[in-house]
Image 1 (tube, one colour):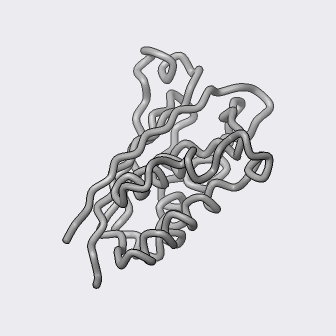
Image 2 (cartoon, rainbow, N blue to C red):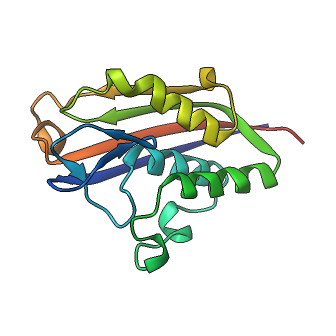
Amino acid sequence: MFRIGFGSDIHKLVPGRPLVLGGVVIESDLGAEGHSDADALTHAITDAIFGALALRDIGTHFPNSDERWKNAESFVFLRFAVGEMKQRGYEIANVDSTVHLESPKLRPYIDEICKGIADALQVETNRVSVKAKTGEGVDSVGERRAVKAEAVVCLECKL
């Protein structure tokens, strides 16, 4: 049996914050604003896993009103979702994701991002796809006011 989940996240870009995507710090003059490290890609993948399992969303499990999660590394959330997934007898068949960011270009970071995500998901890197798109100068992404990520996961039951 397979289950499919979709996740999406968006964060405002501001000066003075790091830009973290897929657990990798990206060299940038703007970073993502948020309660945790604001890693939009990791949040989207985490939400996709929760969605596939019908476990609501990341905010249900890690509310931004809880000070324990202030500046938390988002891989903590992802590893928790992986634990919930494994506890229910599932594993990742594949992840397909897209990061929307006008600049900087993410191509130099994609392999490192895929490796880190695959390690956190406990799968081979060939099961993780990360694509990068610009906003072509349109909307909050294109105007460098936001970073957005979307992810789809396919879970396979192993029981």
